[in-house]
Length: 73
Image (cartoon, rainbow, N blue to C red; front, side, top):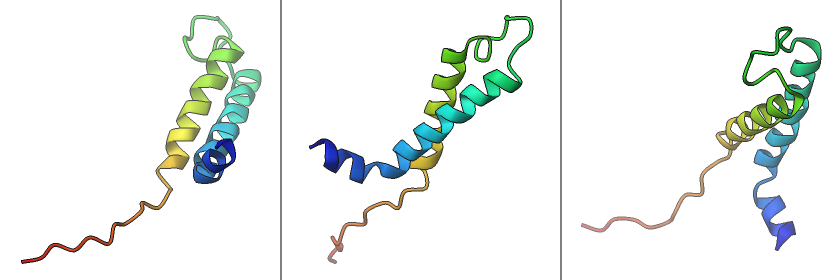
């Protein structure tokens, strides 16, 4: 069950992983000096936000499954 989920959504999961890494790196190297930024002031916020954005972005690249139903006249 989990294996089929991973195989079906591997592109989205890759986006989540890469987004999370990018989010933490963004926090670490750029971040927010004053601590008033909602997303980049804490490593957890930045990592989760970028992981979600990465998952959404990569899931748009997935090819849609076409149905073979043809309309009849």
